[in-house]
Amino acid sequence: GKVTPKGYLMSEKLDGMRAIWHDGSLWSRAGNVIVAPAFFLAALPKGFKLDGELFLGRGRFSDVMSVCRCHCPNEAAWRNVRYIVFDAPAAKGGLTERLAAARAALGEGGGAVVRVHPQVVCEGVEHVYKELDRILALDPPAEGLMLAASNKPHRGGRCNDILKVKKFHTQDAKVVGHKPGKGKHVGRLGALECRLRSGQRFDVGSGFSDADRDAYQANYPIGTIVEFRYFEITDAGVPRFPTFVRVRPDVDPSEFPA
Image 1 (tube, rainbow, N blue to C red):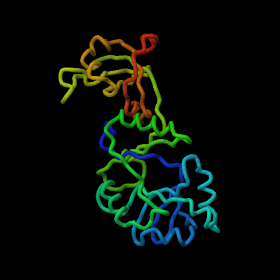
Image 2: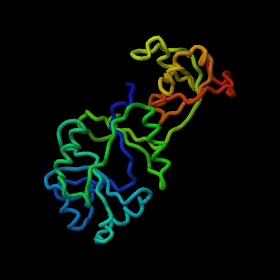
Image 3: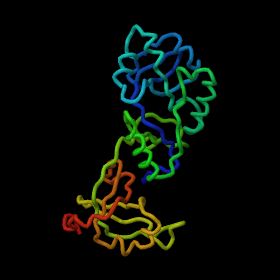
Image 4: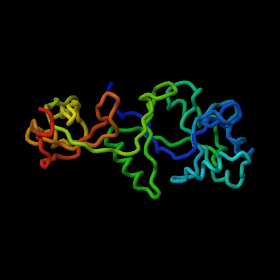
């Protein structure tokens, strides 16, 4: 099915070391105990499972790995590590409720060691691109964004509940149809029906101004080549979250199937 990022919780993707807090220990993704100093473990909530990253800062993945994988923990080095929580897998409800439960479990005391990762509610595809542009321009740059469904119960493994957005790609497509708008776009363009060079069909419904949508037949007649941004190609061969960038009069329409 079609996944839209609207309503997902959006956060910076951290380049840290994944760690699960469970049964009084921190565990690596591979299921090994992470040997942390007593002061660090004492700040974590007893009997409350957390999922997050041990983090030293952007661009410091190798540093945090060397600190946190050592079997004789260096307390001074660990003083700079933060455990950034992005889920409470055993708590009830969707992610919004689970993070609220994590905040309640942490209380006020853990700030120097542990905190819940800030999330913003995504307003749509263009909000994602804007935020991605912002965090990739930081120095050092962030690694990307995470988008998490706000209302789904916790489930492990790969699924559309959590999407990673590290960068965007651009590609060209040929306009083969126009879909009418709904809601506030009634009477204007809803989406361009497009075709890739591979022949794959898909819709581009984001990235247009109201004026673009009003004048769509003049702006994007059938056969027009458009450039669009997207995150990745899905298993079904369709671009995920395509958004319009510009018309490409310099690209030959004969490169695309009729």
